[in-house]
Length: 251
Image 1 (cartoon, rainbow, N blue to C red):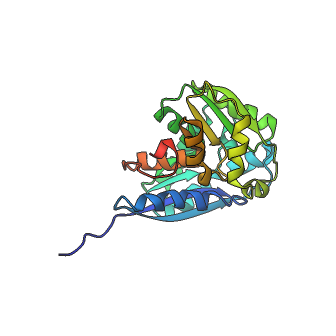
Image 2: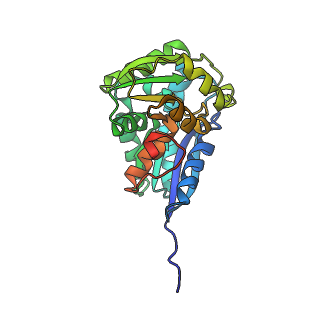
């Protein structure tokens, strides 16, 4: 009896040039999914220059969106996503929708049919999928940028009851942070009235190895923007989640 070939799905990411996490955590979650589901994934990236997480560099990086979307469309990826949350949230409420429109236009111009999304929109999508009305989160950003993230989430109708920001401006340093430190950090976060805890609001700050442990300790749904990105990708592809050990949004 001949086995049916697995469906191959191409995943595209628009990655800040200094980001070292999204090309590890996103594949890790989707590889874990392969253990229980027939689909197989390949991973493709287009990079946009960014070193320091400052308003000026984030704005300059956003200007590269159309180029990156066109490059990924040339590879005919099935779905593409930006891989930086704060670059979009720093631009003001609802900006991910404008970015998605720009990406969609670049896809059409390239003659492709890729589905488009952003990691910023994915966090909102994931929190709403979990029914979250109140959240607490941790992020590596400077305080002023963290405040913009709070404002953005609250503009989407989700209250932020507490946040911790580690104030690390160097994006490479953010990526080198030990994810297991988050299990200690979260002890300082007010979570008692939260519906969901976002262990890492930033897709560059590693958190995947700590997600399930934090969820088990807190007894609350725990997620990250990276995990929400995978959930949003799977929802756009009309595929069930089913990723073990990656927190509530992918359970």
